[in-house]
Image 1: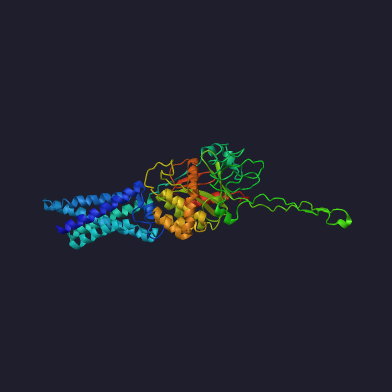
Image 2: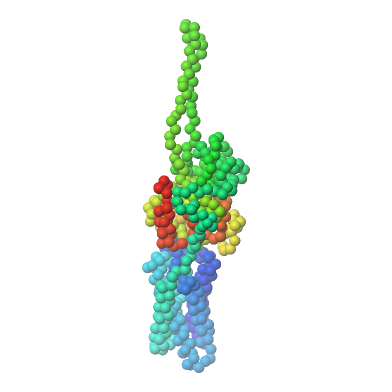
Length: 506
């Protein structure tokens, strides 16, 4: 009786863990106490192609198997003919061996193929191995029955492996092309074609919109004039006739962005002309009874070529949108041939998955590709376009802290950005980590300025401009990708985008 009770307890534990894994798979919730980005990476394991069979998470049939075994163990101690009892034990033996064989298969995948471990998954697999080991040691059934049950279980697991190996992986992403691009193919026929904005003006609070064109300006930034002068907050642009923009310019909340200033990639201000006048008052040379007035000709410094701002144009839902590369958080070099935009949430499991793919792609293309990483929290507190489904508590604060780190120290941002994905910390833990990287006083001052919050609001605005919905979302010049696109497909898309980059941009 004690042996049966132990087997029931093991089945109950296996059922609980498998049910929890199935729930997190369907609800897209992060696993408790399981990080990502390192060897222990539940997100990588549970979002891999081996985590499903026929499109169903493998935790679902596992939960069904443990439930069946638990039910049979409740029956074996009941009065029944011996023949029926032996049949029940034979079915149980099959379940025990099937759970053990599947455990060996999936643990092997984690160690040798995925090279990442999910502790929750390993715990469930250990239940199967324990059941099979106890069944063999305790000799619950005759040897012949155990051999028959073992052979049948191996066949069933071989069928599982065959289905996983031969079934095409269900597409977890979708490529979208805006309707205005579909209707006007001539616009995108030439990669260097000028994208003209429809004329909608998106101005920041308290800002006077540009006289012409569609300028997507951010809070506190003055609309750039044709003179290429970027004025600091509170300073107006130089007087000049505005030039029509090539696209809707999606500006950062402030023009004097620290990382941009550090990189020296901003356009220079208008170079003033200097006049030199030398005047000698009458009486200085009284002996000659006249005054000498020397006036130097106006001296103008030759204007040196102004560095141009690196920009990236992405396909919005209604029109193209242009962002200045150095005005936004970024991974990869600022002078890369190709930049695209990533909208994501730090608490989103699929965002963590695609984060790994993006890092691999940046390394693969060796400086040719950069990514503007714009956090878009799915928490309703700072994103009224979010459905509010799922658990994204704290994502607003995580995004703001990330922006603050970037503004305080752009070089530290990639490390902190990667740490957020790999750890999935609480906002308090993220703040402590950020303070150690950029300084507590500096971080506190930056968050108190309200600028990181303005950035997050601007990211949400862009999120709405491209159709809202789910994240992650990658924005390219003529399309967007919604969902966790595998690294291989992402590399293929980037190769095509690089071929389409105009020679002038390269």
